[in-house]
Amino acid sequence: MEVIILGTGTSQGIPQIGCDCKVCRSSNEKDKRSRASLFLKIDDKNILIDAGPDFRQQMLRENINKIDAILFTHEHRDHIGGLDDVRSFNFMTKKPMDIYAEKRVQEALRNNFTYIFTANYPGIPRLNLNTINEEIFFIDNIKVQPIRVMHYNLPILGFRIGELTYITDANYISEEEKTKIFGSKILIINALRKEKHISHFSLEETVEIITQCCPRKAYLTHLSHHMGLHDEVNTQLPENVEIAYDRLKIVI
Image 1 (cartoon, rainbow, N blue to C red):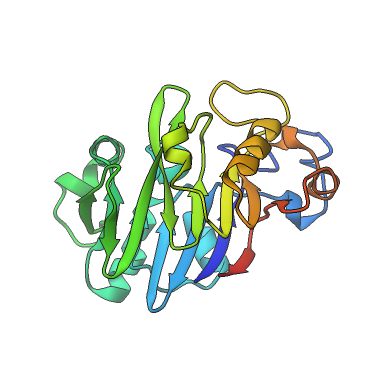
Image 2 (image 1 turned 90 degrees about the horizontal axis):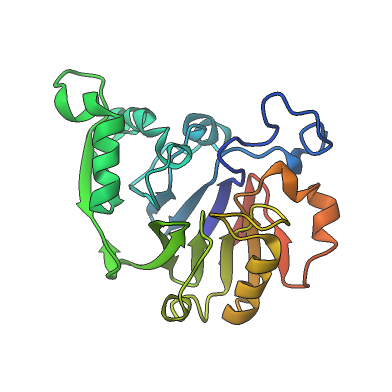
């Protein structure tokens, strides 16, 4: 499995519009964060988790010309906002894009992108919607284990695929769901900032989850500018934990 962490930022990204803090002014490329998304290459299949407003730029930046399926964690705009650009892949493959999402998320896609589902003319994205829940499903022969987490009062999904687990926008994981994470070589998980937040794990809370689930390596994503500078925060973390950054590549 080849992994590219396409985006590691929160809903506003970094730099944040109008902000003059040291993180937003940083010249370090690792402090520049687009909206959270993950790319997986497994054998001949290319899978994307979430397609936010920076989807187009992320695809061009990484020269990704093939996507076989998109998994959506939830319906917030910073995770679905790039859906229109799926049409570029439709043009290349001459077939609809396979979308995997819960019924509630599919309804949000219909409401946010009405023309995709109601119009009938060339140029609109073509989608093949697949309904998922907390049950294991397969993309061809690739096993996907959904993990139910809470984003304040919104139930969303993380995903375990092989030895990789990806969780974003969470502030609670039940003990039962944590068992699905155990044994992961790589855990990519959100940590918004150091201070407690109503709908996202803080740094301390995320490190506690990592300690409980014992991955070989953990990377922190969905970061706000309040977390601090990449290089400074990295020196404060446990040995097996790192701050992720856009374009980070991992081979499992």
